[in-house]
Image 1 (spheres, rainbow, N blue to C red):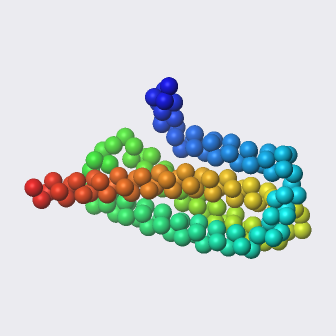
Image 2 (cartoon, rainbow, N blue to C red; image 1 turned 135 degrees about the vertical axis):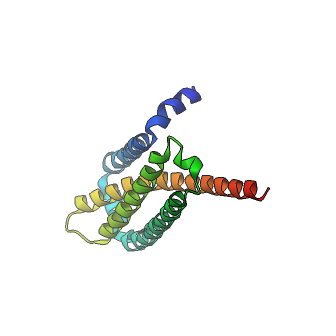
Length: 167
């Protein structure tokens, strides 16, 4: 059964991860708006907005810088022809899509965290901003995991190539 799931997940993994993040965000909205009631999130935002979101702006902004730097390193290696195995792979298009979507998700999450710091006159707008931030942060986490896996894989390829050249 796990093999069947993987076979169905892998061809469209970026889209499937996006749908999973939408589903998790939907569950958060249902929990917050229906089960617990919107007053819970309103109270939390009222007392913790300026504690949580400045930290999230810093963390997500720093991770965006990390992803941009990692993508620049990978592009440099590809341009040098040092990653022939990757360039010949059928997944080279996925590689760029992962980095681009990670940058978009982290950039969007950073902007949403900044927006969450702004005080609005409507609690519903504040909650909507938090839900958008939650969606983008979940997506950023998924994409960041992929980026870390790619960088680790690239390290394995480069170190294997160097050890093969030395022999």
